[in-house]
Image (cartoon, rainbow, N blue to C red):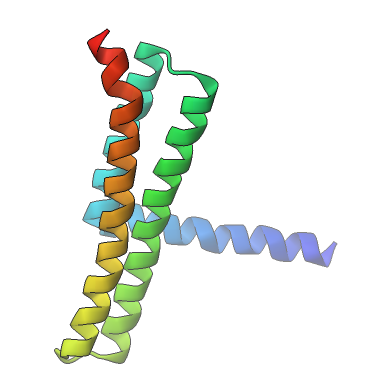
Length: 119
């Protein structure tokens, strides 16, 4: 019973983090908006089950990368409040992870959607 209560409490923390992301982080809102457009387009052009799974996986990957990037940026700001080349490099590296995930998702989305839109 205690384990279940701990699990429920950990979900509360996760939702608090998600709430912070959506309220305070601009890029997660941009990615969420693009994800919503993708879902609407998926329903309109009737993508297959496998295509839905791939879109969901890509969307989750981008949103997760953005959440991790935001967490690392907050941590770097906390441990290195003054401007430091290394701190900036860490932030740039984590941002590049988001960029790579977004590029991969965009390519996969294009492969799925463009042929259906053209035909």
